[in-house]
Image (cartoon, rainbow, N blue to C red):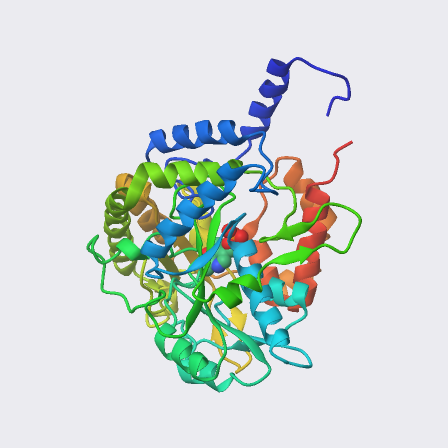
Length: 477
Ligand SMILES: *Cc1c(COP(=O)(O)O)cnc(C)c1O
């Protein structure tokens, strides 16, 4: 980092050099993190919209009414999409912020209605980590209901049993991120409504693709949106299957009272009166503008066309995995996410370990996401898996992707992962050394990292990851 002033073109040249280290964001070779529509015109309209709004402060929509206009247009689009004609809400910076705010609103409503002691948040083991973060930030106790290992879904009866007067919110997913499974939304939301407890549907990943799924030729889905009695809020990330640049999620509430509990307002200080509908104060309006512009450009019909490509590509990937000896699709999945586990019904010599498979697929040019195994509170173990997020551009790449999936499985079939004993013989790796190795350009051995997460106590692995990232992002001098 140079401390003296420099020419802008030199600065940008360096930025391009930095960017050259990144995984490809376009073209479909990374099957997580990025959601490529395959339409360059959307990137272009987003870039122009961001530039237009670059100097605006989203803090105050009365001074900058464009912020309110764009947001209300997106909420209106979301109302139709999620079948909540009177829903209200906001555009947030992303899924995590939407989840945090859903929990904050429910907690404040619970306290406002006379709840005392610690409020509870009822989740499944498959519920996104953002809800654990919310509980941590906002002082709720988490109740985690184990999933049925085979289906990947927490039994509705177990979630309903966890409800009670301390419960501020119950969360279901449509679908869950790890295995792409849609929870028992109707059963849980209905029982929650009977008990006077809000129910949040986390459709962060599914919210902008499931509405078009059936019309696009996908399998029929159970209802999961505001049509379901008892659904009180929904998060739906625009920066996933809405195909907009990162930094945009939609959070809608069925009920104005709950929605209002999301706000933070204070007049009790020396400065300007503060009213914040979301977590930040001063905020950029660029992501909002990009989201607005892309959604306007695509329209419902544009999303329907893209959904058809996702449905077709997902069916092809599922069929390919089912045809690979030693692998199987994990859970009762629906929608565009696929998790792949070892098929333990075949003899060990024919089994394929998904973490080794992920490494083999990477050698063949595609990045899948490894997910560690986890022992649940009821003693059952959810196996480790490989996760694939299917996007419209996957369709055009099937001719390369499917052979890579097959060849990687052939290469690692019958191979065993290093045993936990072998791993612990080397001791717990030093996170600083791991980070320095990765920074020096060495590839991070993700298989080993996931194995460590499976082997170490969860607290220890979480600390190790924090120390790793602290070092990875530290100044390099
Ligand atoms: C991505 C995701 C989130 C969190 O969203 P971010 O945008 O990564 O903050 C929450 N829930 C589900 C189901 C998700 O897929």
